[in-house]
Image (cartoon, rainbow, N blue to C red):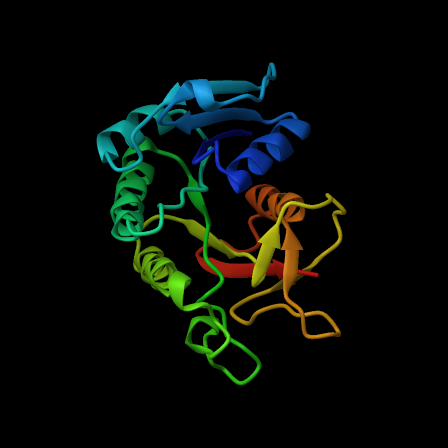
Length: 210
């Protein structure tokens, strides 16, 4: 398996790189600044790329079985997420990669009563623009003519332990017996790399939580 990971220096991107290397896959980290990549492995190659430029995405993605995007825009630059999504879709199409897997947002997941998380009273106002951009990006993937998988995390995702134990859902948020929706970054990475291999959710969204 040869996979290229965009956004590899972010918190989730780094966990994905570690998880893929742990399984001895050939990993390419595509980043704006290669000096920011601290991981070292015989299974890791680092390349410079501009995720907003489809020509750049195409060039670095050629020869890979799959693309993973862990890209997340800065607050206030949410529109760049849609620009990056279009660039990634074009790059997937032109590079010959079989599939793209996406680190998505949780805001578009539905609650038990069918309401989107981002539309609930508890959802933080300051992150609504980013959640809306992620929801719009999901619609771009759903309309795409390439194979894709979109993985929404639990409502709360933060660094923790790699347990390998979690539950999978589709469009509804996964909650525990206390009503909490959580996942560690490490277990999220396990779930997404599992999906890279198993291909259970091709052309669909899934989510993961405890």
